[in-house]
Image (cartoon, rainbow, N blue to C red):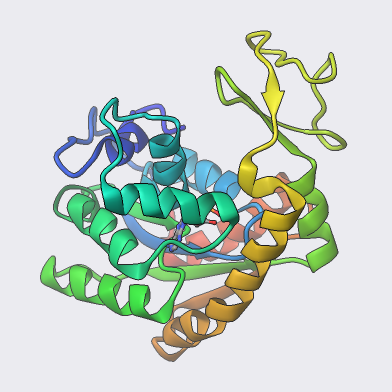
Length: 253
Ligand code: AMP
């Protein structure tokens, strides 16, 4: 999580303010991260935020936060439908996702430290809507990074993932096991598997991704914004490749 707290602002909603602006080491970056579920975009997003201070939006995080009742209020009918789709591993409708990002656009797509979109856009329609929101704000994307990895590796990563029910610390049964099986090292809470990491939902998620990714990639390829990164290594080595791209987009000052 971004120590300056703006990820929290994204989760809270459109009126939440970014807090404690801090100097960034590079000029602000406006980025989109693409790639299938389980490819490691979320981890790379956190590393990028730590390096350059951009404001991070993960639409998946917003839905997960809503699913555990994060806002305190009962979900709206549109959100309830969205959460049911998420549990099945299906994509949420374009209208709902675009509305959710639009709510946050005036504050966060305008953030002086730049932004990092993780998990949005997922369809060509969403990509066109994002273009529209950015042009209204007189902003442009600096780059779009697409992470890719073999499907068997992605399935192994997703199916072994566990998360603490209480503090949300993440584990992996093979790559990052807890000291005591099923128990969180950080708080002693119970480890669980996300509904959408269960085998049936994983299959649906990968199919949904495969069905919609190419038009999005083409959209950004045509704009000359697309950078492709092979992401089957460990997070550090993938971040080394990511840094090469970031330095091209915004050379360190
Ligand atoms: P993620 O963590 O990005 O894989 O997102 C988890 C789930 O949230 C997805 O499987 C979808 O159900 C939903 N979701 C997140 N972002 C989007 C999006 N841009 N378009 C449609 N559904 C989304």
